[in-house]
Image (cartoon, rainbow, N blue to C red; front, side, top):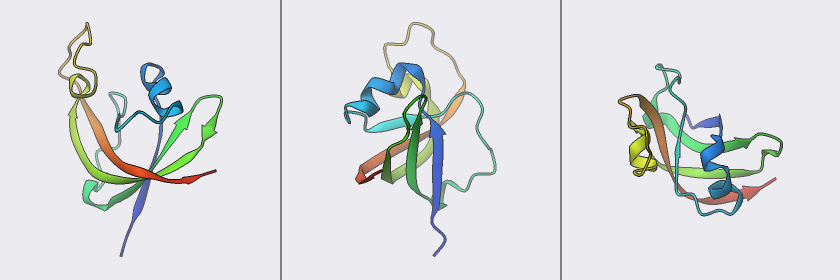
Length: 94
């Protein structure tokens, strides 16, 4: 079985949710690799600037969506698409 990991920078407006473990969803920036096989992403490792990678999560769902799905009250709605990963649970602390 081919299980791949997504290691990605946590955006500044989402850091506190990953530090206090309240985040259940993650979104990338406007640019992400378009050749990623979403159905093969199995793990997620959020990279927090200044703290590094601290946890490994199982990905429940990985798909393309908008930032407004993660932050519905965003003042500046856009039609930019992001890679969205919905995490299942915390697996390992480093």
